[in-house]
Length: 250
Image (cartoon, rainbow, N blue to C red; front, side, top):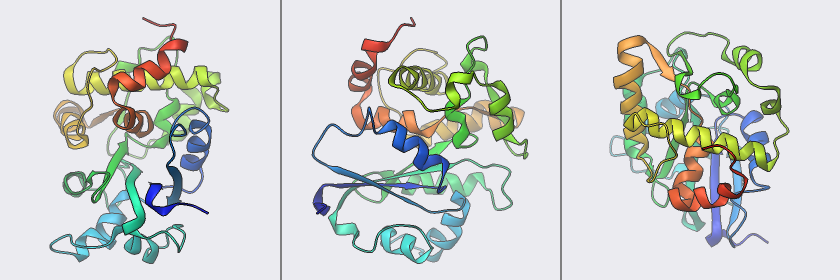
């Protein structure tokens, strides 16, 4: 029997890739306290969440979990908002989607900014496959993608990433993935490619993407939402301590 007052709910965009990543991740993370982590899938892009849920409510006063159930998510019937401690939403930027809008995304990041209240939204740029877009001879801070075009990004990642990041991932792989993406997060926001000493608001990250990549160059800095979520969950020092024993890079 799940203790609902201890539940952490993860809401993923897709029903396949994100759960596969989470099932690998939970072997090493999000498994070290008494709370129960469950996930559900929304099964379509973030901009449909805006159109079908947020746009309906002028004052944004609604029950997210019940709305997600109405929109064909896979949230179990027994899960209700009052018994869920934290909600994290993990979606793609998907700038090439027909209903994509930077203004809509900004509005959602402002609203979904607290995991214990409305929920907290995390974005993968340009999409979930960014998590494995790592190659040993290409500096990750230089890795970008087209922001608004359908460039067959999944195929590009499979061509470019090191073979070891095509899954299944061991703890050593997760260490590198987390270190690189958290350092890239720091680079996007502060121009310094080192593991951060603090967390960042997700709107701050998106505004940095807009200022440095999207507006001037129609590019996006490749970044996965999963390591960024872990950075917030454990704190910068806590997450670094969890990966440092396997860290072999500077």
